[in-house]
Length: 228
Image 1: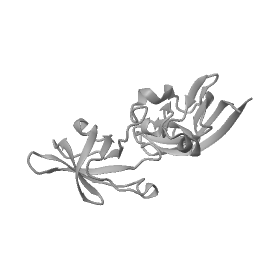
Image 2: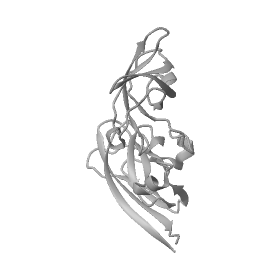
Image 3: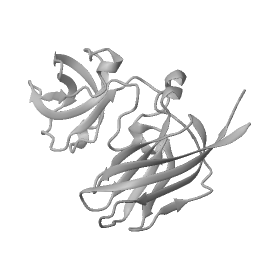
Image 4: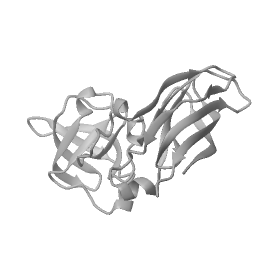
């Protein structure tokens, strides 16, 4: 048996930056229709958007069901100088464990490219500070994201591996309408099949032009197959 699932999501997005927006839908299917439209009464601007099957593929998103958070500062520690990270635990409490020596964490999104790699924790200073094996080069001015680096089937922050619909530019004042897309997807937010079906979405990386906040509606339809 087969069927369709349709929904409209309303969201407020910050202009000039990436916004990671959940598009709830069945765990697997075919994305058939996607319409993105700015709906507020203010000035209209062009916007770019891309669809992924994993939140961690978005520039500003961490995967679901992982120990994760933000990196708010990096300073030098000892000689030779290595990284001492100040972090938050945005998704820490629900998953019930703290970082330990020997754990590996993946960092992305800082303005220092050499930090955006896998780090091995060499010392846990306190609940929000860890020291890693990566060499220190400078402080950061752009906060990054971190999450645990437990091996999964796919690289968790590789957009190419999780691309469902490639980048599209919407024109100011018009709805960007995509029909008959035929984009087969499967939610990859967590490789645990049980967790994967508990909270399933595609993820829209929406980047409105200029600054300020803008309101959007995203309408979509997927075709789904029911397997008995």
